Image (spheres, rainbow, N blue to C red):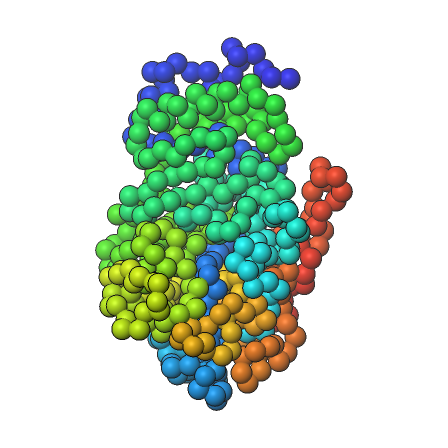
Length: 463
């Protein structure tokens, strides 16, 4: 039953609403509060930063170089000895080479789809999507549903700028458990909750805050689906508006300039820093769509890609200079900041140092992967094409076995030479690290009990 309006704490006057909302964020409160509304185990202190390398990074030019392979396989760059004896990574990742003793590498990863859409949905949910669209939820949405909010007034799950492109993050959970996205430049962000069809609003907009409050009050007037809004959202709304947790977390100016420079003073580096701040403020799961825009990919400021079919060695390092051999029909879009490889090297190495210095690395799981790897042979355009048969995954923190190298590919990097580990196994390992039993947890409100993972925890990954 819907309580009488007179008993609804959200039926406040405009003046009261403005007083609460003054100086805070214009948030999509109905969707935000729905996203935190599942009852579940909140005992785990482990959070996760999932760095999704959208477009599919080359394992050869990142974490699995093949220096002994033929030239057309090994490419232009050499391997570099890391601080883990016998472990080499690409020479263009010198900062990470000195921090491989903090991470684990899974080199025998293997996917199933070479399509951006199906591959992305597979690796971000752990289930191969059925025909007709994504059914199973992305990791962060599932964590939100099972464990709920860790801190009152702080969303459980964020996407920076989205919770993985080509995906429908909440899947069968519905929009109540969608990610809360922080779009645009983190230094001047735009917040968007993709719930109830409300438009995004900007920070410190009192009129937008009032609109959101009024929409929140109308939740009591709509039909409720399983896992959606309940009366407790009223209490959480007041907590969100009065705690200031979101406002503090989003203020990157609180960080020393030297640290911000180490992450990278650009959209991409600052997103990784923001993820650390959100986790520190109480978020459980942050997905970063991490790829620089420029070169042949276009000039948008938000959604870049690692999809290097052409001019890979130019595109992965810098978009500042126009190559002489641009393929016919393409235009080169300049970007003065670092390309994907140096930006990943800067932001990931700094994140590891930053979390460890703050005593938070063991309580924060870091996952770095794309939707597939790249072909062993370099193509005629100086790039590599989609290749799900082999790839690399990096994990750190969250009791991950430091310095471990799990599995291997063959001499040419074409197939796993040891037991392959797939997206299902990565999913089971993520849930295990976060204190969720991947083999026993299910949602009985669905037509049939539905497991949240169908793989095995990766051997040797956890200490």
